[in-house]
Picture 1: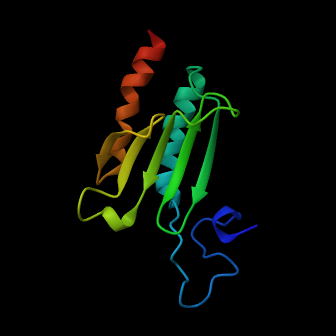
Picture 2 (picture 1 turned 90 degrees about the vertical axis):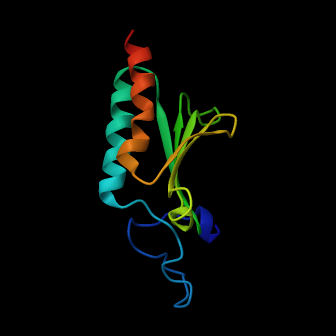
Picture 3 (picture 1 turned 180 degrees about the vertical axis):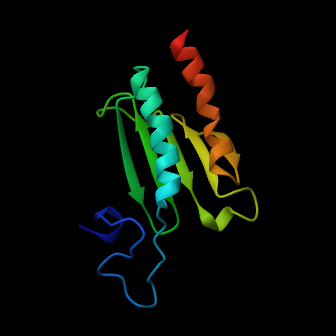
Length: 122
């Protein structure tokens, strides 16, 4: 298992990270993950989403949302700190790879899903 696919504890560098590379993997902080899981829980309750995956990579952290575990992700919420000064560290990517929303603040970015929740309830 390589470093990109291994399991990591939130906020801690991987066990096999060298001192020079320590901290290079991007993680969701607990408040960020709580915000994302809050939206995820509402969409699960509405019957729209059923599964998720979290990936912590060298340059980005990805929260993938699935309708079914066997499918491609419907949405990916990506945190990429390297882009925070240019276009914002956060973005939502659709199933086709298109950037649907981009921003500097996670709470504003997650409002994108409020429209999907309203459609699901109607």
